[in-house]
Image (cartoon, rainbow, N blue to C red; front, side, top):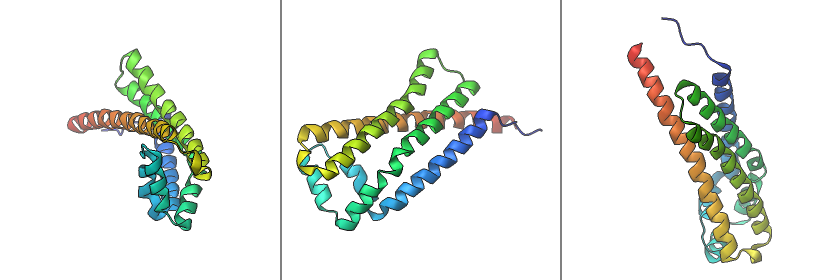
Length: 173
């Protein structure tokens, strides 16, 4: 049996997925031990909680937290491209309806846009903690949660879609 031929979308998906892993690893390395606090900050829900989370960080941890924002201004573009490429390839292999395809294609871009809003707000609030009101923190937390839901939702859809295709291919092979 001849191995399947890789398409240009397959190569792009593999390439962007690898770039994503490298980018995510770089951000994780920059954050180091403060990484778990990022999710706490992203879902603080109140100015008091936001301030308490930052107060738990020493100067080194705050510097690590601040430093992660700069590569995180490239990271959303990377994951959006990787996810959209996955959506395009899965659609070639197992087409969905036009509406579903449009939503799945748009979700990574909307997620990335939310990530940019979150990053700008995060840097601003870090420098101007006195402006972290309940309303601002809730708005940023909402954007963060929507970002995660969209990105992880598309990733979950792609994972189950490709798994079905690969399992079917293994059964035939």
